[in-house]
Length: 266
Image (cartoon, rainbow, N blue to C red; front, top):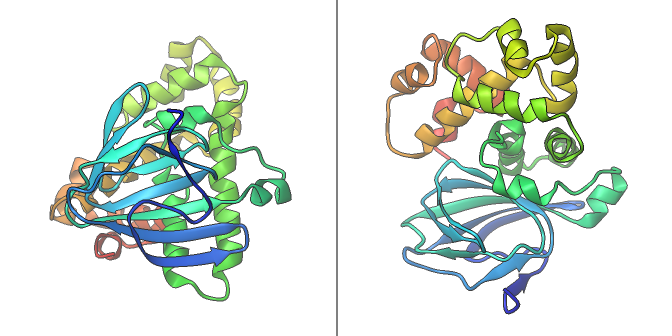
């Protein structure tokens, strides 16, 4: 789209209701009236978004996707897109990173492929913890947000570098069988590798253990349910594969920093 509008630093469609600048990282919340539609546009800086409520239909060059409450998204700079038919009460949290952030911390900008891969658990990879610091906004939030952004970028940049094909296969298996019994031997047999090899390199490419990754998938599913409707927490816990509400609450807080009921009420 040659006529797409560039959105420069701090510029987002909608009305900005809160913004904080932490050095090279800008966090903000935007709200949208029902039925609004944006022009075709692209963002000059890379950023992550977490849809707190509502949503829209996002049109890209090759497809259209429903972006609903609870989704975590990444936007690679320069990719044209359009958002149409915003739902009532749409609120979105954004984390925008200057290029100086990547230079200072010797990081690569996450690749374009991350923008198009909906299976990556961005919310539980640090995005919701950044939201928590954005809301706290105390003397320690700046250094915390820097660290959280570094972890979020590192854990996802690994999946965009040269890495073995088996990592994508295992990721698909884990996403398809997140609530079933899985063993390291079974996973290794499916990709034709020795269990020791898979165990050794999984953390390198995914930034966490098998168990941690499966818990992140479960919490990602819970996030969508918490942000859409008023389903009881006990029902969400069982639906997402937790033993009970206490197990769900402990795991959710450990990964996101929020109690489920507090996150739901944001």
